[in-house]
Amino acid sequence: MSKTVDFYFDFGSPTAYLAHKRLQQLGEQYGLQVRYMPMLLGGVFKATGNNSPVAIPAKGAYMLQHDLPRFAKRYGVPLNFNPHFPINTLNLMRGAIAAGRLGCMADYVNLAFDAVWVQEKNMGDPAIVSETLSEAGLDAEGIIALSQDPEVKAELLADTEAAVARGVFGAPTLFLDGAMYFGQDRLDFIEEALTD
Image (tube, rainbow, N blue to C red; front, side):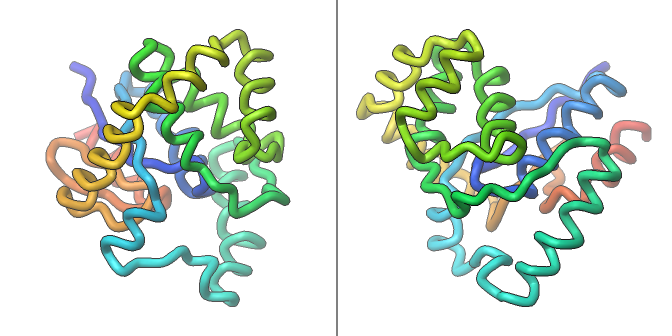
């Protein structure tokens, strides 16, 4: 029987990108299902008093130059540092909610992560988002229009608050069988739980 993991993410996080790619691999290997849980990482940081690792210069340099490339190599996935980082992902995250309502969440999530962390696109630019979605065959006009709906905006804020209430303090955060796992470097524990 396959299991389902709740995956809390923001497209602005390179570690969330790595977790996404590894979860796809675990899905293929073990039948793991992923429930995508969009949230605003900035909102989570503000609510919890947390901050991005790159806010500490030495830690940020280590992560970007050594740690993240090592995990990308381990997982066998591409990772490029985006020259537009940090990207304002507010509309992109609203787009994830919209894509979920339109039944294309998984495709949208994969596309957006790749656009930011492989293709190095400025996905904070609405024109680039529209072009990227259209090129991939997604309904760019429909997703972007729905992403500006007041109900979608409110849903993203509510989802962010719900994430904090659940104990989330950063991205990626995952829940499997009621247990919380923080960070893409904890996915070995997810795999262990799938093989128990």
